Image (cartoon, rainbow, N blue to C red):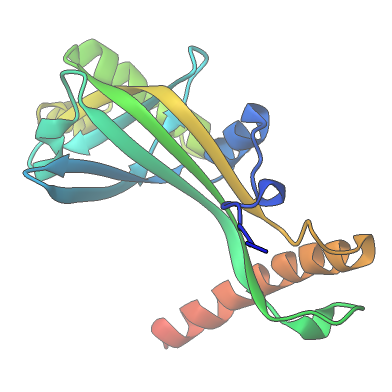
Length: 203
């Protein structure tokens, strides 16, 4: 008998676009991957999902990646949600160690936005989104620092052509084990951030 493993397992795939949009909105720092001369160019920067269903971003014009973020070039984008190691000790049934995570993989086509007025408005809109819900800082249209940097920032938009949600959250386990894995994901992320930063930035 031949055993064929279908990968990725369907229970670890989430094809609900609304779920993927929530990941994008909650964890907007994206990994952008383009290819030039068979070599990958990788950049990390925040992208905002707008009402038109496109991703909007800004990049330093001196970043080598900037020249590829235009003219309909293809691009791959990864958004990363929470992740952690899952110990068998948290389950009520016998299991093996694993790693749970949430990722969204997108493919798209890039278009440069050359309008300085659109760039300025976009920077204000992105700041407003990232400052939600308290809006303790407002980027004003007459901000001199922003005005002085507009010549060094390139704006682009990405039309999404492919969506893939990778939500590995112990969905193949029994209901109580699934709930325990969810609780562990929350606990581990809260504690690991504090521990990591405390180790790296010792006072």
